Length: 318
Image 1 (spheres, helix red, strand yellow):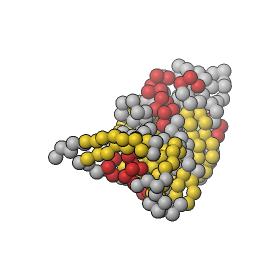
Image 2 (image 1 turned 135 degrees about the horizontal axis):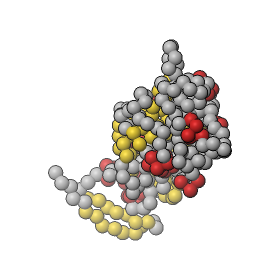
Image 3 (image 1 turned 90 degrees about the vertical axis):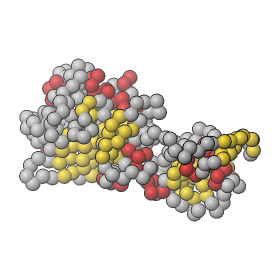
Image 4 (image 1 turned 90 degrees about the horizontal axis):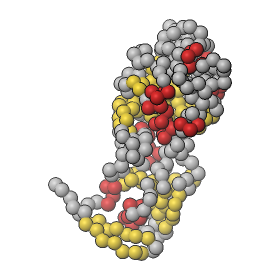
């Protein structure tokens, strides 16, 4: 059945109300507690306005009529707090009884796997995301199981089926297949890491029998834009794989046809990859799959040195 939306507008309390008839206003908002664990919490990050003595329906209406993406509403105090961006982590938050967190959901295209997870889709697999509001959709693997779920996988190595020894243009735009091996593209990674505080997780499996699984998590991860040669900023290590990415922190991205490393030779040519090479690397996750030649494989020095190539690698952000 087709539902027609009728509305009229009037000004009250300094903002515009839009009244809908024939459709449930609540359908435009999703309660996000299952994803963000913000029940009985309130946060100030991205805060744009606060209104008191307001019903929940009016709170939603105010958010619909302005540049607002999410609200905290306290049913005890009847307080509405609008935010310009969706919260994915608990930054600048405190306890407050009676508060619930809602985000716009109807018709919204997901920017990343965290937003897909928040919408209620909790199965690991291939999804379409839109890193910017005006971008075309890109296929990615969403890890909905590891460490709370909602991870956007931007690099994956599993079988050597995709050639990672590629030029700058390929590393900028991305290549491969989300079902097997792929690189999401530096352009997209930049956009995804420009949306507030972003974490990085690297999952690794060594090839030696017995296989060993390990991981590294970084609490802050950002890749600059092309003008910065997609410079890497990564800090806040934890995990059991060792901090091999620390050596690459602050480096520009280098490919075989665009040398931005600190060595006289091109490290991408020397070690068959595209990476944030310094002079040259302590990890080389875009190197030659399966190579045991020193420094040319999928290396993570603190786990297995530079003569062992990982059997499995996933780099993912949230």
